[in-house]
Length: 523
Image (cartoon, rainbow, N blue to C red):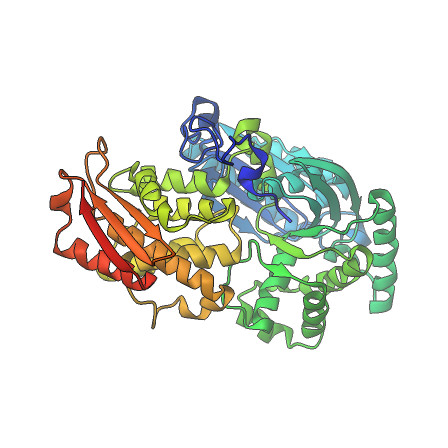
């Protein structure tokens, strides 16, 4: 349920963007713009009910990488429902973790450091004393936010990864659960509740928990009204459940961001968890003991949530409150950018041998895709930008490194099928055959037409990469006549020497992928 990135821009009569439009992914980049330089090395500390995490963002501001990312499972909210106080051992661990994070922030020269605390600190009777202790020990000022603000920031984190997304964001922490509407790039109505697993642990029976969950969810839905669009799941407990669902389904791509579930999946995984050997399941799925202890309770909440909301579908978000704090600092024109293309452009500038060649390569291969829609064109652009960023890898492993980049990298705005398409295209950029590769189990996520299109794109990039020039003149152009299945290549006289033996073999491989006759001319 996400709007096409290019659908929200002004087009000309042919449906294309003006060449100088900032939305054009090959227009002027923003990752090195003066207005975004302040977003380099941004630090965020999230003091939650279950964990304390420190993240330093860096890289392309619109789709930043995690320069530093560390969490300590302190359990500040453990027992809060019974005692009203922060957990004593958790408090000691949190102070030590924050002292470490303050020292790291100083070493990394972080100028902009945001520290937020959520349900445990705001609800505990000793929350203010804890905040004062942190100030005295570390010098850090903690911003204690209420539930509605927590909902807003978490929803903004979702918008960081999905510009144009609409639906309902559900953020679960250790001691609370928040809901927030998103639509048109804005956060709408919000609601908060004490439905965190640490709070629910005080109820002795499953039936009592069900009644408590239903009571709060009914109130929240009365506040928000009907919600039939996509449900975005934010929070470590939801991600752990998604990882278990991947295991249950034998899902081939272990990337949590953009993982999709249905109502049936939620009910099935809740039953799967209820009947499982929890320790064995934890080890199989690589989930920490502290997190796994919350999963059964969180799965009960999720199952009941489906009964109250009945969403169109469900998407897991790896982005939440920390990313929302980064989004808060972005100028609007940066928020509107495509995070995938911005990240790929940053990677090209940083790692490619010939930065800027990705644009020419894109223009070279596009005649092979005359009917590509806006969403497919942005994936083709991403592939062309990334086609050379792994050149430093050993030649025998470049295809594998490309695969890892596409399927494992922190790339926003990229669904699972698109990840596999991008990975396959980049793999074919470096090798003709995909049989026997690690990507094979994931190809079930693509249709036969997509498999063929990715192969053609990869082989076109493999050939096009042979036609380097000074960038001042056009080296060659491709043409494709589907009616006669003829692949045309027009070389300039200056570029004819580039069409050597290896280039000829790569052009023949591309023609083979298209099952085409060839027509080569020199202009």
